[in-house]
Image 1 (cartoon, helix red, strand yellow):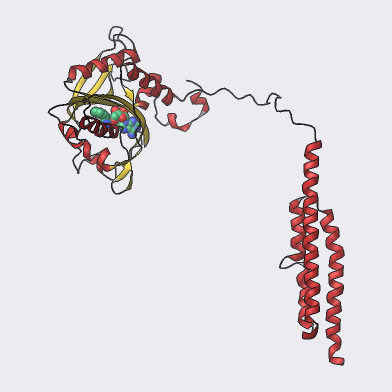
Image 2 (tube, helix red, strand yellow):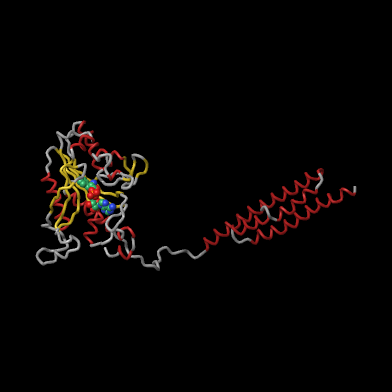
Amino acid sequence: MSGDAPAIDALSRIEQGLTALGDRFRQSFAAATSEPALRAEQAKLLGKKGDLTAVLALLRDVPAADKPRAGALVNAFKTEVEKEFDACLRALGEAALQAELTARPFDLTLPGRLSLGRGHPHPVLAVREELLAIFRDLGFQSAPGPEIELEENNFTKLAFPPDHPATDMQDSFWLRPSVLLRTHTSNVQVREMMALAERVKAGESPRLAIVSAGAVYRRDDDLTHSPMFHQIEGFLVDERVSMAELKGVLGAFAERLYGPGTPVRLRPSYFPFVEPGAEVDVGCVFCNPNDGSRAACRVCKGTGWLEIAGCGMVHPDVFRHTGLDPDKVTGFAFGMGIERIAMLRYGIPNIRLLFENDPRFLAQF
Ligand code: FA5
């Protein structure tokens, strides 16, 4: 019998321990004034290193015959803790709701203390909208184009030879083989001409005048080149289009953008998807040949001309690759950098200023 003495002690010690814990947790739960505080009290009691663990350690000393009773006591205790916890949580929620309902109402109509200046379009966006509006006025229809593009639409169908430097990993951002961030908006030419070819098959006439603007990406980074920038592209397809019409459109565009009488010249240049190809220059808008300011002009470097775009007559291979017949259709295309136009317009010396979003810079427009 004397061997049983510690066992009886263990069971009653468990009972006493649970009773003591019961008194304590009821007090501490009731005293918690927030949900996190209540949860902390619960953890103190039931957590791994909590008070209950110390009491449960006594179970080791309880003889097998008394174990069911000891287990029942512990389970009853846990159920009681759970009930008390739920009741306190509910009471806290109700108290918070009551406090909110009886608090002084928050007046949403009061004027704010901080005065925030009104925003305005970013210079790149403003110039983009202005350019699009000019070309829409001239009869071009806007079309969208994806920034993630197939190599085929960005290069191959535009007659870039496979070893052209632009197709290199060093010059373009490739997402995986054959898929890249478009390096120019000329991908829209391909997509629109392919759609036109389908319409021609269905009996429509081969006619199209599209303008498209958006972000493009290249591995470039200096004062006038950024890895992400924007271009605007225009192209027109019809049965007998000549370079005279291209020059006419560019002339009308330059006059609307820079004022009546702005001269335009085309300088021979190479782009794989046009033949002939040219750079578009407009008369420098910063200096004047008549007052001696030209020689010192840092923008046009004394030449009197500013390069603003690339252009040319659509190459027969582009028509072939997009499903149109180069014996039946002709067309022209041009493309320009929107940041370049904005920098020229506002005299911005560094392209990065356009992307840093410093309010002191942006407030100047
Ligand atoms: C092209 O991208 C041709 N797709 C344009 C074209 C369209 C030619 C249709 C013929 C027919 P280019 O690589 O020159 O051409 O780029 C056009 C303009 O984008 C440049 O004149 C320049 O203003 C701008 N540009 C080019 N790279 C950058 C850059 N990294 N950051 C800012 N602007 C750039």
